[in-house]
Every structure is written in structure tokens, then in C-alpha cells.
Image (cartoon, rainbow, N blue to C red):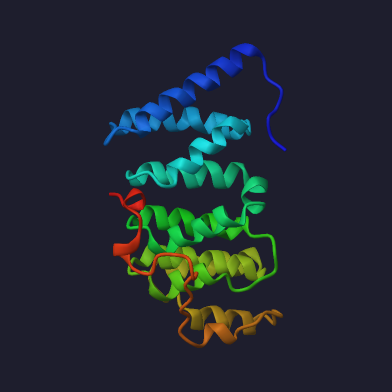
Length: 219
């Protein structure tokens, strides 16, 4: 699936980048400037679909530093979509990161990823809907709404105008607004779940913050 042909020098360079990233990600903290520089090097690996980087990105989803978790979602989710779509457990973990992660930046990134990553026709995605209903941060709710509205298939103009009004706090991002837009534009989508509180927990997933493994908690 991945693993483009590369010469020995490029392979050596990529392995060196991964080694530095492994070392940096194990430290309690890293300077922002150093982190940014390393991120863009890892981005080059991801853009090249460098397959040996996948296990590292997966481990970073559990890093105690929120920046590494956010980076991992971006790099793994936006550059290895075929791999993600074929890994149900990993995909569900990203859903629970949207619901449970203590960092709003991580939750925003997860909501943006879920907009594009799901291929089946299930609507609404339960994690996006729950984030829209319950997340305490308005920006997370806004990105969850944007992802759900994108998945309805409304025109780009409707999406752009609606999100402009939400981002300017002229209207609230709510399940009721989503239902209204679906009905106004005659979209053949189920709306029953948009009219009642939606509480879904995976039976094997921690139910409270205290139960979340320490490795997933962070700044």
C-alpha cells in the first residue's frame, strides 16, 4: 500500500529523522522551535507515505504531551487515510480522543480528521455528534458541526456561509441547526438522533477521566 521506492541516502535520512523524533517524544518537554522543525521533517516522511513511520505516529497518539498527540493525528490521519480506514480499532481510538482528550487542540484536530476519514454512509458519526452536544469548548463544537455538515453533502456555499456565521458567533452550532439545514436542503439523511440527547460509550472504553490510562493524559 505504502512504501515508495527510495534511494539509500533518502532511507538513511528518514531513519535519522525517526530516531530523533523517538528521542524527542520521550522527553517531558521540547522547545517550541525545535518541535516545529521536527514536525515539518516528519511531515516530509508522511507526505512520502513512509511506512516505517506509522508505528511511531500511532505511539504518539498516547504521548503525555498534547502537541505530540495533535501531530500524530495530523500526520497519521491526513497522510495515511487508507491505513486508517482499514484499522477499526485505531479509527475508534481517534473518535475517543475527540471525546476524552484533555487538550482542546487535540479534540479540534480529531474532529477535522473525522470529517474526511470515514468512508461508509453512517450518519451522524456518534463521536462528532457527541462532541457537538457536549464539548465545553466552542471551537471544538464548531469543528464537529463543520465535519457533520460536510458529511451531509450540502453545497460548498451553504457550508461556507453557515460556518462564517458560526465562527462569528451569530448563530450557535447545535444538532437542531444541523437538522434544520438537512431538511431545508431536502437531504435524504436520518435526523432522529439529532433531536434527542446522544450518549454513546464503547463498552470496552474507559467511562470516566479517572479510568483513562495515564499514558493518554497530558497537557
